[in-house]
Image (cartoon, rainbow, N blue to C red; front, side, top):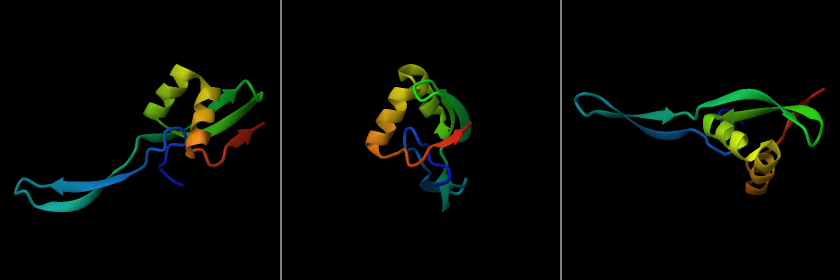
Length: 84
């Protein structure tokens, strides 16, 4: 499950490279996804998530626990790595 945000479910989409002569070739637009560590206070542990920039904004806005519950409800959250 690479380059998929565990909070928002964003992933790569396909499109066209368009040259100056309007020749079209297929390409991929990848999501802005990176690995971050978060402290989950409700469970008293550190977790590692693959999260996009918009996923980080959601975590900052709603809180980690609410974002994780919403992601699990929508089916984006498959597994959480824990760090002790």
